[in-house]
Image (cartoon, rainbow, N blue to C red; front, side):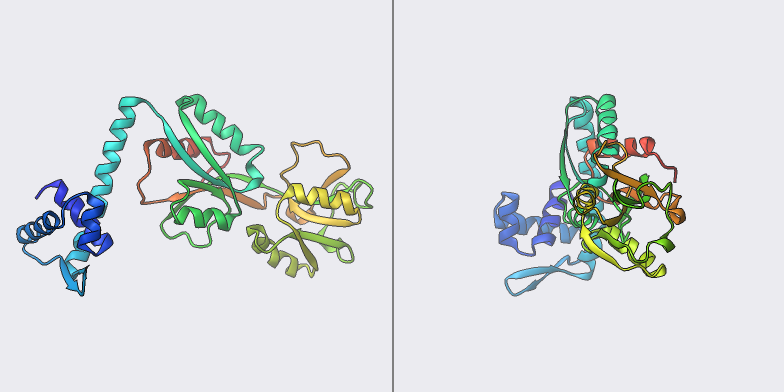
Length: 296
């Protein structure tokens, strides 16, 4: 048994067709067939069975495939790691992120990371909602994402990185603008707006609004849009995350909420727990764990 046989086996198990697998492996179909046959003889079990023009794994083959995929992934990881050691840390890391950390936490963290590992790392950053980030991670478009808590954490690892408070946003001319804080119980009768349903924050806020009997219109996806909206319409009150405190926005005022003085929303680093990661991505994950503003 040799390493090539195991790579051939994995590709055939993936494509379930000798012709397609041999083409993907850049070998002839007879060579692939002989390699699999020799592997089966050495193991003493049938790994594949014919189904028309295709093949599929037997029960023995399925069990063998689970272990082989893990073993080959570890080998590839080790080879990649040694290559990175030999050439210095470099490469590209694909990031998905929600908009709310892109002005403060994310640039500070990435700058600190590059200061530690050097400037050869390239970041490919994509902005999306929490749902979009998680879909991209699961589909292999992103190496890591920064977003809200995954609804389904199966096979995902999470690291809390920063929190955000819930506040009210109003125009400076609004009657609430001079208040040092406001209670949810005082908001009935006001024209309230908050996040649209496609935003993950909506799902977090929905039960809160129901608990206080508040009618809230879906009107924005991010905090910059919320600030623009309240300044333009002046009579509305936005229930929003406090992410604009580092900006001087004309005519916009944020007000603490009495019932929400503690951090309301947590942003997480999320990545696939058991997937292969490049050395650069592994270093970023470990760095974020040390850099994070929160403890587990």
